[in-house]
Amino acid sequence: MINMHDDWLDEELHRSLRHKPDRSVPDFASVMRAAGERNATSNTRYRFVAACAVVASVAVVTIAQWPQGDGAVEDEFLIAAALLETTLWTAPSDALLPQHQFDIYRDMPVFMGSTELEEGTLL
Image (cartoon, rainbow, N blue to C red):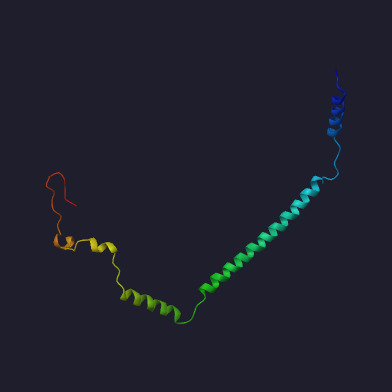
């Protein structure tokens, strides 16, 4: 038995699925052309930002390397030399080490022989 309501739904579905060209969708060539224009604009913007960054970094390096005066460099060396002459650095663990009783290189110039004949010298 065929229901009348089912036929109406089938006809409605058939009508809705029927292919009708939609004019609101642009064609591929115009979409591709617009994308290429946007890409060119963004590439130009990136190049401009990169060029500005390079110019700024060159300016910073140039200013940093600019000579500061005749005596500025010599004063820095004099200050560093005075600092090295007036300060003494020791390791914090030096207090834990025993005092040197003898210098092994001056007091014992010859290496002791091994107790075994085949072993060689003691290092």
